[in-house]
Image (cartoon, rainbow, N blue to C red):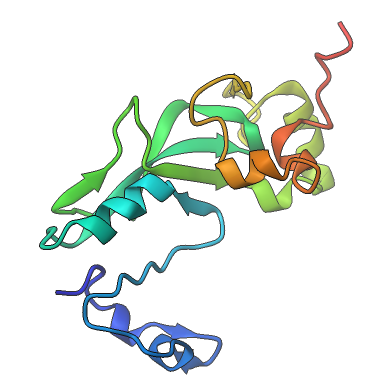
Length: 162
């Protein structure tokens, strides 16, 4: 059973994805997610340890904006946003992270909104996240914070000077 039905037809960099993977076995797990979606490693371990999970699946992800220092007031986002037999994560235990506009944070048109803690609509107030909170950011980023400083700390924060 395929985790994501129809995935075999996806094309990556001009080649079918199967041609980019050596020794693919019938029970191997293939995740096809964009760069701003990071599944929780413990959720992936679930798939490694359990056979026969229903498909398709989706993840309930912590919805961060600009970096892991802001969370959208709706708190979570489903990925993919389709019907699924199984949803990994809930409102208290996320299945990973959805980091909207994290790769666009140096876009000058977003810097004022980031500094004021506003969503792109310039009306919705974002929630401040702190590194002491559970699920603040993926552990890899926290362990290598010197490489991911701009995703963990808001360099445009206008409230730090009060």
